[in-house]
Image 1 (cartoon, rainbow over the protein chains, first blue to last red):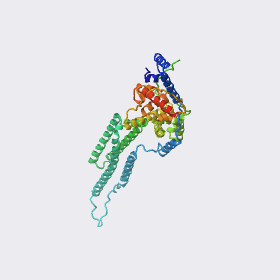
Image 2 (cartoon, rainbow over the protein chains, first blue to last red):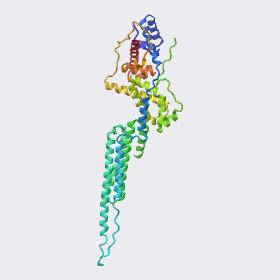
Image 3 (cartoon, each protein chain N blue to C red):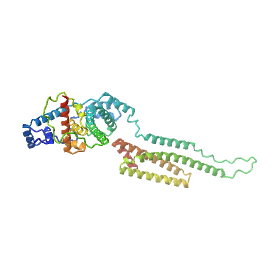
Length: 247
Length: 196
């Protein structure tokens, strides 16, 4: 009876213990077929061991080189959607700057015009009130426009981030959610303060700052997801570390 | 006759990997975005990786695509190279994992779990040997092996992994690895004999 195939294989690989090897060799001494098989298998092994590395065709490097030079690491977009996010943020920044520069200058203090007939001057304070109301309205409008710009950017970034949030580990996702909740609370408080005092500059600035912070956090989230998708653990760890420090 | 010492299990085979002089400097240049430095790294290691990829895939054309993917991946990931192994070893690990992902993905698409030969449960002794196994195009014969046993054969007989490592890499039992390698050798024996 011929030895089992695994035994023959192990014999060829010199992986049998002494007793098993002796059994096989006793069989081989009387079995031409098995001796020829063992010889052939050893020849296959010998030729396989003698295989040389094969050089790839030169076109392989050409393609790699072209891919690298067309998308150098520094200039390559981090993620296919990030340019959209970047445009949203740029558009928002431009929009906010436009809104800020377009804000009408505060009206000059009212000066009582000499009456044509030298009669009584205009009632004091009436022009101040109108000017203040106009300013307040203008500021409200500007702020509304700025908020709309920021909100559009935030919505876009949220869509991108939410589409692949599953790529984040639960702890990081929880940290990000917590940070977002804190910022949203600040936004709501600023809005409430502005409702009570529309012309309050600190409240206006607080609202705009909160929007900027939220956008920055969403940008980091998108960048983190992108690094994780690329398998860049070091890059992902850096971003995640930064996010945890901000929380 | 002395019995050669059993190979100790290695995470990666003991076949030597070229450790280039100035690996550290080369890697630093690549990490800084120097494509010429990356080309030098490619030239040092491409042959070994192309050989692995072509043989695992069973096709030089697939091998070309895999090499391209492997090196582009390496370029992106070199930022995370810590230097705890030689860059050649690091590249090789990347290549093995990438090739394994490729064969698994291809197998999943084809809906097959394992490939087996038509061989009978026991070996097929050749009753008549007419010519010696000479002038053999072994590379072409390896390409013709069915995927499952080709992968085990390439990892074990060509790349030098032991059966325990092959089993771990392929997600099979150690006994299955031995069986697949045996069947591959039998198939090659038959293919090579027909060519002579």
